[in-house]
Image (cartoon, rainbow, N blue to C red; front, side):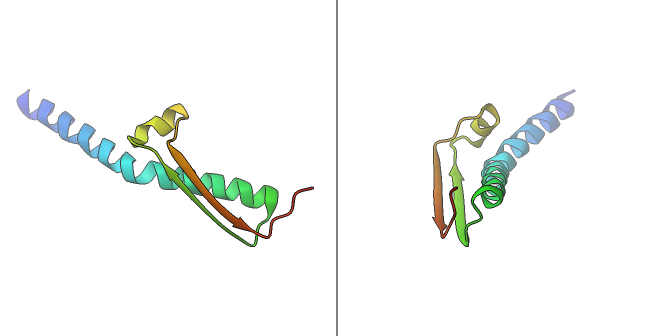
Amino acid sequence: MKKFLLFLLVLIIALVVASQFLLPSFIGSRIESQLNETLKPTAQTVNVEAQPAFKILYGEVDRVYLCQSNFFIS
């Protein structure tokens, strides 16, 4: 039983650490692709920051940095 609980604890910690690195880049790429479809910029960079990253699952972010050039708004 102790080994199973230790395994679960290690698994949960690994998931939290992985989400800290993977979720912001995943959401940033989704925002970037949606903006590419809508505005069609020649260059664009999107950076999403959230601390802790699992807040993104609830729709909360701390900062979104966006840099675009030569886009069209109709």
